[in-house]
Every structure is written in structure tokens, then in C-alpha cells.
Image (tube, rainbow, N blue to C red; front, side, top):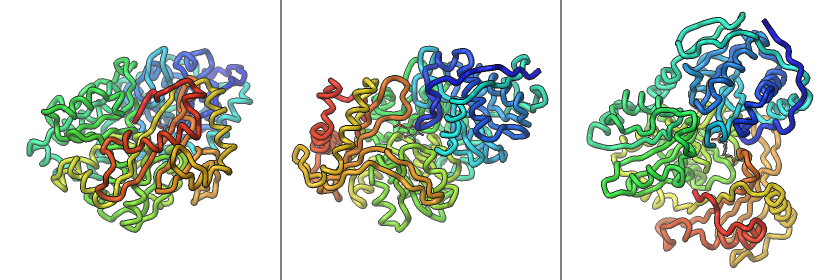
Length: 542
Ligand code: G16
């Protein structure tokens, strides 16, 4: 029986960089999830007769939310919902399923790298028929619907069995429960030379993959240990837990400390990698060398042709504006286009759909290609392994050769988390107001060359996104970007992105923090971070 429930708009249901992210308890409050989901249905012209994909990263409330969403899809007339077994799907696997099955869209339950648990974070994201995150025009429509909503519809019925693969009915709607890994593994087998990677692993090459108790565990076990023959135990923390074992499932040197320690030990494996809560981010570490996400994107762009899925070369690459320009140098040298987009994977969608970019990446540990419309953690790991199998060099060797050929973009991001929102907003507003006067002035010894509030005109559909970060260029090629995160759930997070270029082997300190010291000082001089926020050091340095 369909129940129509009267409701009223709930404040603050504005999707951020990647869907709506809130504290789990906020999502668990009566009507909160229901209001948002009904607003999605309303914003996309209803779901009557449609096929949707549904799954999430397994965090606390994932299972309950999946039941609610399935019942709401049925109540609004959806024809079919394809669900990952136990409501699990990594974000890239969900994107793949939408495309593979010709679904009209999908709902992904995840707050990505944010911690999970009843007292932590939860999130809901809508992806369209191309498998990618809804573009801004749709997220704005969803937000408008949340502000006008008067009722939602849900089926009054017992929960459906999401643990058993196969088809069942929920009212008139078909619920199809699928193995979350199978189709994704088949796609990876098409893109990469599994034979060559298997031969590499058989030659004694050792790897360690840290799934961080999150959704990639089953995928990594099936592919790395199963299909490719990595030694049992190569995948660690492989069982997804509702609270990710109490950690931040965020693959960076801070939150993946164990992996870093392993990779910098005397008996380190040859290759280390980690993935995040929902499996779309990645971290790459060689023996004794951490590869920044920006450098990883550049190396993948320079070597992708070594993998079967990319032998025809790349049509273009795209990076988010704050990501370092390392990939730009590869694009210039190899003669393909390079685009700089605002932060948010959704901005890559049109470029990928139009065939103008083959590879995309972000400083926030996301890399992907036109094989799906999300960033893809395990894909990046497999492309690295394919390159290592083809080149038979160490990660450190590949990095050294890359920097010698293209030069090195020293890069780091400093995060100041859970700041008072008013203070963080004022810091940004004041600097924004001063941008026109900055060129030609001195900032702790560096001369400002350009200063802009980044705006992006999509080359495919002409849509414009404004106020996407303050970008300041210095004479000599250094660059500073400041923006506020759109994925936090507590106060404001200020992100300070720092970059400095050195052509070829150089006299700079190998430690990026030392090499970037002048840019760090310039950031402080321009924005007054310590004085305004009372923070003398960032909470996270990546
Ligand atoms: C999301 C977006 C990314 C973005 C990242 C950080 O990733 O998809 O494009 O780079 O958030 O965004 P912000 O700097 O606004 O916090 P994920 O992995 O969290 O979905």
C-alpha cells in the first residue's frame, strides 16, 4: 500500500561538492532522508517506469536507508531497482552498473572518505543515466524541491531481502540483487593486461593494498588476490565495517599511516595502495616514495598507452583547478588537450561524454577515465600495476624518470578543519575583495603575477560555475589556491593548495614542505590564516 506522508521543507538540504553529506543522526531523523529522496524524484521528473541502481559503501545506516529508498522508488512507480548484494556497491561499480544496464540513474549512499558510524557522517548522491554525479543544474533543482516539498510517498511493506542475489518484487517494482563485484571485475579485465600483471606478481613483486575497512575490500580481494594471484593477505583491512574500524577511510599519508610505515620500512613491499570509504579515491606509494595524486595523474597520462584499454592514446586530460599542473606538462609534450575544471567530479562528465578527455584527476586522490563517470580507486591501482608490469621499473625509478623528462611540480595541500564558519567565510571574502589589487604586490618575498576568483565555462554545454576558489599566481611559476571544502559536515574546512615548479633535476629540497616554504609564507601573508583562525598549523597536510 502506498502511503502519502505530509511533510514540510527541511533547511540545509543543499547538495555540496558531492551529494548531500550530514551527520548520520541528522539523516536518521524522521523524514530527513525521505524528504531528500522525494526531492530527487521530483527534480528528475519522477521515477515512474524507470530503472535505478542503488547501493552504498556499507557505512552505518546504509542498510536502513537502502530499504527506505527502494520503498520510495516503488511508491513512485519505478519499474526496477538494481541493488548490490547487502546494499553494497563501490561508487565506480555503481557508475558502471548504471551504464552497463542502461539504467536511468542511481542513488549512491556514501559520505566517501568521511568517517562512518551513528555519531559520524552519512551521505546520499544522485547519479544520472551517464553514470556520473548529477550536474549543477540538477543539484540546484533538487535543492529547490527540498524547499517546497509538502509530501513524500513510500510503500508500507515489509523490508525486502537484499542479501540473496536474484529478482523479487516490492509492490509492482522488481528488485534485482546483484553481485557487486562481477561486472566491475569484467570491466577491469577488458582495460588491463591481467596476464602481464600476473606475470609481474609471479616474479616476486610484492604489493599491499589497504582497503581501510571500507567497500573496496571485496573488490580488491577478488581482483588482486583472486584474478591476479597476489599473495593471500596482500589486501589488508578487507572486510567493510559500518564504522570503518573507527578510522577515517581517507587514503592519504595521515589516515593511511600504517601503509606509509609499511612502505617506508626496510623490508617494504614493491608497491602499496589504499582506497577510501566508497572506493573512488586512491593512494599510491612505492617502496620509500609517496606519489602525490597530482603526480600520479601525470604519470598515468604519460604511460596509459601501455595498457590495452588505452593503446590508441588519449584525446585529452582534465584536472580540477587546484590540482597541480604536472599533467599539463605531459599534455603539452604529448600534444593532447588539457582542461582545468572546478573541484567536483561532476565537472568532468561533459568532457568525458563528449570524448574530449580520456583521463581525469584531482589532487584529492581521485583519478579516473572514460570507462565510468566516477573516479575509480582500484582502476588507478590496476593502471599503475599495468605500467609497472610493462616497464619493469620501480615506482621510485618511474618518478625520477618522469621528473627528469617533464620537470617537477612540488605540491601540497594544507587543511584547516572545523573552523568557525563565519571566520572562514570572512577570510575568503576579504581576500576575494582584494584580488584586483594584488598583481604586482609583494607577498613574503614573492611577487603576485595574477589573482582571480576562478570561474569555469563548460566547453561542451556553455554552463558557467563561478566562485570556485581564489587562485593566485606568482612570478617564477609558483601558485596558491584557497577554497572552502564542499564536503565537510562540521563548521568550515579551509583548503590551501600550494605549488611550485622546478624544471628537471633541481636544487630544491626533496621534501615538498621545504621546497614550498616561500609559497606557504606567501599564503600566510596574504590571508592571515593564523591571526584569523588562531591555528598555527594545518590539521592535515597531504
Ligand atoms: C568529492 C568530489 C571531488 C572533490 C572532493 C573534495 O570527492 O567528488 O571532486 O575533489 O570531494 O571536495 P572538497 O574540497 O569540496 O571537500 P569524494 O571522494 O569525497 O566524493
